[in-house]
Length: 193
Image (cartoon, rainbow, N blue to C red):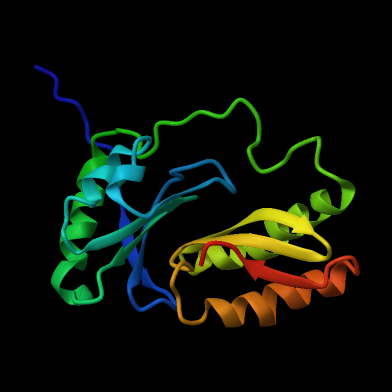
């Protein structure tokens, strides 16, 4: 009798600026490039069976899935040494079955809209090309929210959500880059943080 072969899954863990978050990096892509999914609670995990299962661990406070990684944010009263290996093994076992971590398909690129103004297209392009890769490296994501009267509003997700250094990153990094590249931009603010 033939047995189904498990998918080879290799995971390593990376710390990031948020001490309550840990990035679990996988050896293959989990989502399309530039697409991310942020789950602040178990009720929001309708399109992600993996995130839903991770919330069964009482230590898990938030789950974020993007590119080739899962960022898990733990509750304050738990130490990573107590839970990281169990969470890593759960992610590994789940992915070895070949199940998808996300059950969503897009008919068009959700990041870009042909109805966007020229300045919004430029802002999204800069966020995608220059800022997203750096933020993803730290286990998070930045998503364009709006642009009005010179103010760009963005959503910070994953390890960036609740991170002590996210305000510094937002003002010293993202705002400086956008205001330097686009004179129409005067300020950058985080929405919902």
